[in-house]
Amino acid sequence: MTLTESTPIGADRTDSCASGALGHPRPEGADQYTISEVVSFTGLSAHTLRWYERIGLMPHVDRSHTGQRRFSNRDLDWLAFVGKLRLTGMPVADMVRYAELVRAGDATFGERRELLVRTRRDVLARVVELQDTVAVLDYKIGFYADAHEASERY
Image 1 (tube, rainbow, N blue to C red):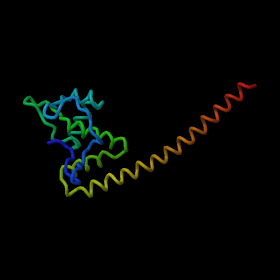
Image 2 (image 1 turned 45 degrees about the horizontal axis):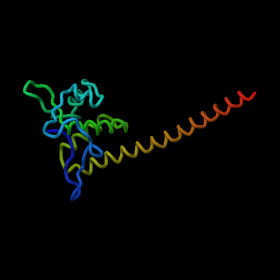
Image 3 (image 1 turned 90 degrees about the horizontal axis):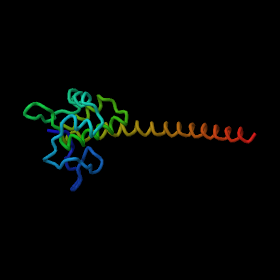
């Protein structure tokens, strides 16, 4: 079992972990990736992938008959989504909680939504802070450009 959300929301919509269709190296059904392949696709380290599995963020990764991890396209989609959550600054504990809610099924839609709404609110607040920071940087850059031009005139 892999972690993706494919429960219908509307008549023709599904809740996917990835935003939009992702191009995958292999077609569904032939999508058995080793941990080293996933490392090269995602930029995550093997240590991080194992840690994700250990803490419950990436549970139920399939294994080969020799016990090697085998990831699927759905796992790659989930990892892309987790990467987006990481960029938001969401705490790991909240990401693990979200993964638990996904596994628990449709009855958790409300709680999942609330977790994402809170995260979105935090991200928007940080965007405002960053916009203010960019304005300060722009002012300073302009100041130094003007000072440089003035010093070259004299």
